Length: 319
Image 1: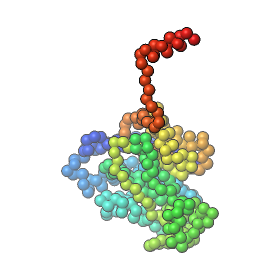
Image 2 (image 1 turned 90 degrees about the vertical axis):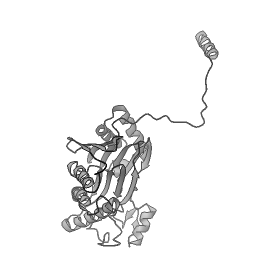
Image 3 (image 1 turned 120 degrees about the horizontal axis):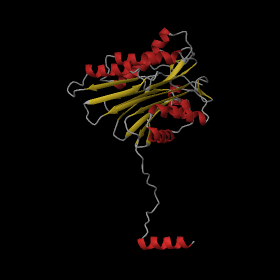
């Protein structure tokens, strides 16, 4: 079983012109980049420079790739997708269009350069641009946002059991057999897998197995606490809300995001997870998540008078 955990911590101060990034690399070294960005010059070339620094220096770690049939596709996409994104001529002004196009372009590059490899990978990336969070997903990894302690699903699992995916598959000449795409794959979107006959076609509309990601973009607020990204093995044993509750409790105890990732993986194993496990935690605040007072409907507030309290004390003292 492959176990991997990492973390990222992004802190945006209340002053919109100051951005501070703290990020943990796989070899557990910390890189601190502080940038004082003028609001008058935060545009085009400077924005691209910031993204280049984040993606190249920090290894674009807000992403999860879950390979199948070997590691080649996962490693290829990990090493090339960030580069393809930032080198696109429309980056960063048309970010959603660029990301969608880059997934497909990276998939085609894998087919051209690694045609002898028989592997594929799901892919989920999370990018933060200013106060916008963009999640792009192809496969069954998942991203869940904690907003004031409430879980918000930022991606959809692409599996054959999904009705929308089943209709898309059938429209492209594929079928679902016993819960598997064309009787072979447990996911309906992935990069790679070009060796599987009848799965992919170059050009539009493509085959039943698609590398096109689904995107979701939101504006981050002060109530957004952290983002959990995990491979499907995590979500086999955690619900969305359960993962948020678990992470909040751990962060309230020690406020250590790297340790929290480790604890998520260990808890998944304890619950019987049998798949590969990857957990990434992106925290949006330096402080631990606050305690939340839960209002329980149906409960009536009650009070006791001083005389009543004294009578109760006398009564209890007699026993």
